[in-house]
Image (spheres, rainbow, N blue to C red):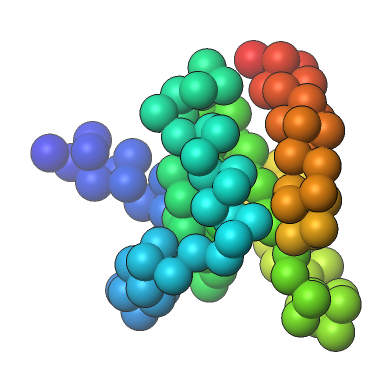
Length: 127
């Protein structure tokens, strides 16, 4: 039981309970781009397990692969005004031992095949 607790703490990087509640809300209200990408990566479709709206630290990663320590973020229009916040978030997540890749909503909606190819390349490199 203690081993499971320690693993969960590592997986969630000591996220606060409020973060878990908000992640649950976000899973029920995903954006069009998030839904499109989720449909292509869920159920180990790329050979690794991704979680969606995954709590970590003070943040919620759009998609997270624990085995590869890979975070995928899908940025909507609001992110053009939050560059400093996004940079701080990326830095904190990377300092916890993860890598972060970002795509815009437009990338996912208009060029999903290219997005998937980039993700596949990173997965192959990280395995």
